[in-house]
Length: 213
Ligand code: 5GP
Image (cartoon, rainbow, N blue to C red; front, side):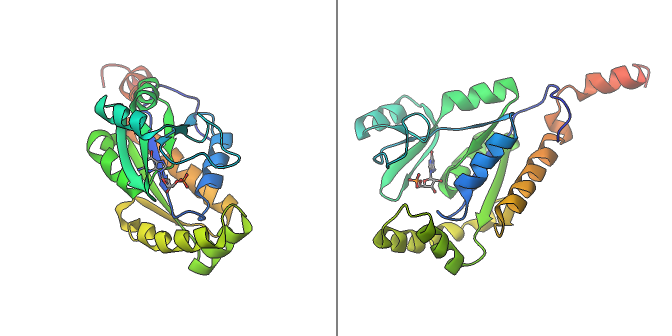
């Protein structure tokens, strides 16, 4: 889809949505489709759910370790979400930017807001909306991960998360996963093509038309 990698600045792609709007599916599909994007693995104090793996879904840490990571300035952002703490480790972000690779964040609006001052020029923020609240609830039921009580709670929190939609640059209504993925990929492609992100263009154009121009 994109031109072969030349030197460029990496993107920090933030994908936020209420739970059930398709964020994890779209993230997985984007990672499979695009070899230049890696996923940021957050640290969290929430307990591991069945099917999750340490270091893949999250780094599962206790409160003491999370406190230590805050004190050691190891997070680019962290926040309280649903009664637990979640934070984005700094080292992989710095490494990705250095290598001109893109990194995808499944974080909430609080995280997106905190990244803005330090990484604004690299940031691409995308919010996924469900087609309707009924469809969101339906998806939460059919994925079969949560009890009715947990789903009722997620639905209450969904409205709070959606309330922050206007803080994002790109907003997509996820009616169809494939179509939504296409649009996410189009956003990523356009953002990579921005002049300021292609750091070797000056040299390239100098070679193209000669130094006298
Ligand atoms: P879950 O516990 O269902 O995996 O995630 C709950 C919420 O926490 C999701 O909306 C997810 O986007 C958000 N989240 C996950 N990791 C981070 C993080 O490192 N920072 C912030 N601010 N939010 C996160």
